[in-house]
Length: 223
Image (cartoon, rainbow, N blue to C red; front, top):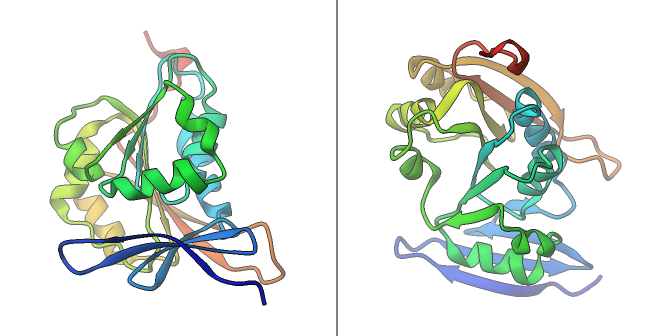
């Protein structure tokens, strides 16, 4: 068996520990020993980015927030889908070490030289409370079954989005309580199931929650 190598560790004030591990070229990001992102299993992150950006491919200056960087696959796919000179991609990552590890060890090192990408050392909810109707999409990756989103956070996401835009959330399985919270905040909510990865022999599935702020008006119909 190939050796397991720790590439980075960051202890938080609350006692939790983030770690980045590598084995045989595969990176795994862990929180308190639980895998949160993996460079072998990222198909659902790419699917999330494609679905969240599909309504806005004709936007001249799309602004997308990546809520939680992980290993950068959602960011990379969103940039591929919105290959526009004036697009903006805001990475909300409260753990600066995760950004550092992506720059040093991640698959998408070239993205960090792109001036359209900016990083903020804060949570997405915190940043969204300072914005009103300025985002075309929000991509929120969540590694575990339950996403502990408060109604206040959901309302912050709702208010930060432009009309018809999507908050897309990647979950390991369906979370009805989260869906109810999003609806209470004003979102129209739907879900879809996608493969967690296009690699490997076992087909594991993830749930994507798609929360839309109101009706989407095609760009061709806008005045």
